[in-house]
Length: 278
Image (cartoon, rainbow, N blue to C red; front, top):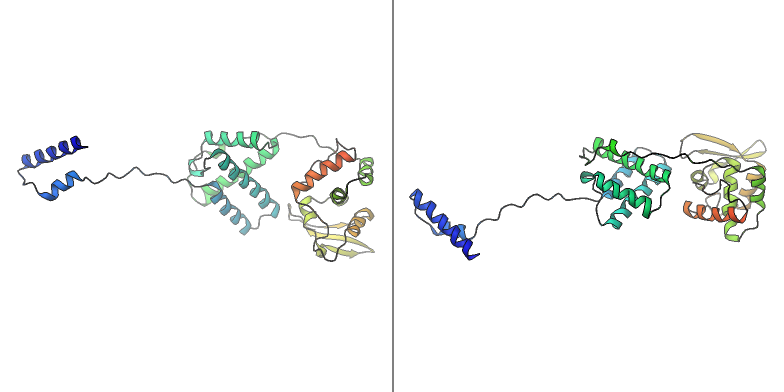
């Protein structure tokens, strides 16, 4: 430090002498206490979840279906899980193929996502990045077209009439009975889990000596009227509770799927299509 101060002072003195100027105390102080050079600008990174939350609010304002908002929330939570696991932010501005590959490893190997769940997550991510680029003028750090992932065809399994009867008559623990009944109700009416879980008394109507459901489908936003068969109506009667707003005691989706797999095994339907109600 002293050697540097001596060198700086001598250089200052020589410059003054060559210019014929008189050295001043203020000049000497400036030499001995030079102003620090401005540091190079540091890019402040931001978690992807901050932007993703705004994206979901934008989708809500534009009337996107509840189920669409739900699976975008799942994707958002997977991104947050990666940031915690990797100790690295998924900042869209600095997003790169290297970071993308690490995200894929996390989703495949750590979260154990099925191939088509991974495809859904990537579709959500790409639509999110396009929204940032096109509607928020954010310079995304990667060419979105490079994020390519292939979907896989999965075999479609079906329940026969015998399977349905076997499922309906299976002896089950008390905590699994409602799951079995709600799955059967989905089969009898053709409703998705998201629609069944939202059913309330306002959807139920009397018609021509029977009953029907009138509702707006959560995925297609189409209005439908579904006549209740004797079997479907019996399930509603079984769980009729004036104190409950919803028509059926539907568990959260993950719990339903977990219980349904146990129901299928206990009913002897290990190859049936009731491994997932989503």
